[in-house]
Length: 365
Picture 1 (tube, rainbow, N blue to C red):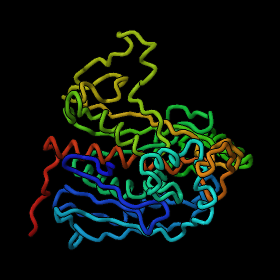
Picture 2: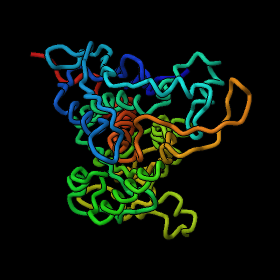
Picture 3: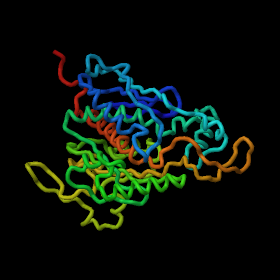
Picture 4: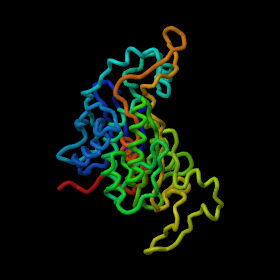
């Protein structure tokens, strides 16, 4: 079972949904990085459950304990172990459905893979709860990237069939002010209505998160099998519910001609730049210097109150299931910081691999 990602900046995910804790181990963080704990707490608060009516009512505080790898406020170069404790897990509903796998969830596949030894409560390792550890590691990665001016921001582009227009102006602040993290106020209200309507009907909706990484220098990445977009996609597919990832113009490129799809080069401010960005800031597995733009598609939350057909694995018969408990009617708003985290983790790793970011920052006086 693979629970780690990265080559130099290596992240290992730990914990289960209803276990004692969830968290991450970050190995390869540059020594000397001043770790901003307030920034880490802010990232965790963005992902935290129970924050609005469109998310689960599970009330975890998600306070992070840093247990190693940081001394006197700076990364030491040793592995950084970060944990948050699961204090509000309610496993009472799960024994009743232990033998009836939820359609759309990984209950059946994990049981088949681990022959029943997996922790089934709350989905175990396949639960969105493990993304708390992703966000911890991503918060560190963002601070690593900040040393070269790189920023990673995301927003909700679509929920339940409602799509937001291309954002402009200070969309980052506008997105954070929205309950669904959509920068467009009209689309935001329509998305909220879509989520609330699905919730009333015991159902759920999916959507799409758009992400932009800015100020990346050209040439970061690897060719062929370790391409930067390949690694970003791999990281994003570790996020439960992600079913598609596309860069730049993505699927729209299929309908374009080369003269439309190509991004022409030009000299601007003494630098090679592109006049469009259909490639999403990546060519040949390497960054172009333009913003990296991508979208991740999330399926609807599989745990729903509506009755669905399933099987009883103990009896070997057909059955039905109606899932009780506390579940997100839409995971997309809480997934925004998770997408940012996974993108930041990969970018930090590739920047360190290339030497764009040194493995020791400065010298202690």
